Length: 271
Image 1: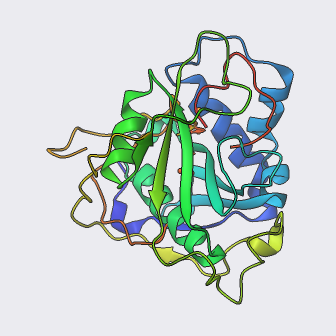
Image 2 (image 1 turned 60 degrees about the horizontal axis):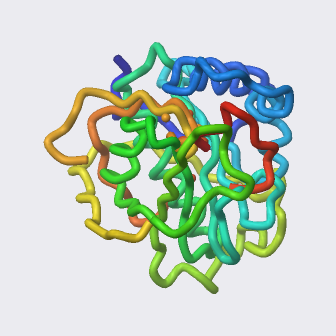
């Protein structure tokens, strides 16, 4: 198990894209929808980390030894990869944690970092979708402060016979005050939109889930259950989350990662 206090979440570097793509595919394959057929488009979406980085912010969770144990992608609403975000919202896609690192806290750290990046963009909210069978991803998002939007569904669906849950995290006061160092929120973004600063992850008390009946795209495999709360909704990423960390009010395998017109296929079930 990885010591959460030693994890660092930062933008992925170009030479790490292949590693991130392989990790994402492996994480989703180990998730609750890994048995479903996968289209060529979906396979490319998971493995082409470079394309995702060009369209948003590609974040990685790295150990003190330099090992990448998780990844998530934050997209703007007008990105071709976003599928549930509306104007002014940022979307987490393909939140993924290495299946061998379940319980490491990487999922929690990636969600928190995604929220923080969305706040820098000036987004008014962070959204994501996850499969109905991805219970672990749902717990991760709810512990992180996300609430369900019951009247919103991913554009184009997420696959035959797959039910998706859409979640949102409000960023009060963030809209209209983007960080001057970040690319304009209305822009499709690119490598320049990646956060220039990486910060160590610190554990904290879990953020209680708001009990909201309104309505993540990663197959999340979370850690040991906590008294409180996968990137595909089902959560778009197979996330292996760990002991809850305190979410800084910033910040999603629901693809569990923080969605758009990314080609949907039978397995496109959680971010």
